[in-house]
Length: 381
Image (tube, rainbow, N blue to C red; front, side, top):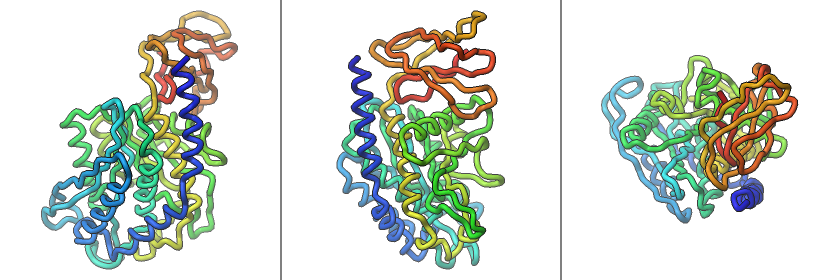
């Protein structure tokens, strides 16, 4: 009963936080970051931008801020090994289980030599950095169960180098990393072809119907649908765009659950050019993408322990009965979807029990799962 009351209180608190997301503050962050001549990972300006961003995080109560130093190895767009830095801000939870919310700080201009020329990088990816900073402001002081790390990666445009360094560190240090959310190019609702979508953001996840990253994406879609008004997630069932990559990829390759958020209609003619400017962005749209992330991270950060041994009872009826092993005082929810659907289509809150029956939804045509309040559901077998 206490856990159910706590869930209700957290839901009310989330509603207030969603309302508090500020498009003007998002614009101010993007405007500042895009004012640097470049944020190329080989430039002095990327260090200046990282120092500024670290100070912004330090101004938020309760965060531990690290300027993580690493070396860009010689390779694509890196003529020689080069010291670099990225920002990692941590909001500690009561559990060491960790969520990463990240975006890349660096920018690139491919209209000239990769290390030369102006690279404002407003949408790619000051938009994601601004979103991540706004999430930290909204989540500070909330005392989450899980630890949250807000990351501004560098080396992305040179081959996901900063994300690779952090993913390797997470593996080497045995971080209990349960989810990584990458936001890259999330600040524009239309392209030059006239296509526009102000109501959705795409979320890419690893291929494989039951991959952990796919289940994370599915849960994010469900959570946003319940929590955010007039804005939804469009699930894309592949790791990233065709022939492209993002900072979630190194985490997937290390075995972690990770997904990518990106606007629906990106404009390729602005990317990696001097034309990636603030005036091409839609900050009301970016605010909604921020709210979608906030709803997802809030839910994941406050999630109660997941059930284990979720099992379908093998009987021939029109109903479906499931059993599982839970923890005392934890309320559970049963989810289901048609086998042809990528999204959860129905749910039933069943409370602090270890057995439930879903009436008139058969196990032949549907996939079932059980989740603790706020957590990614566990598939039934």
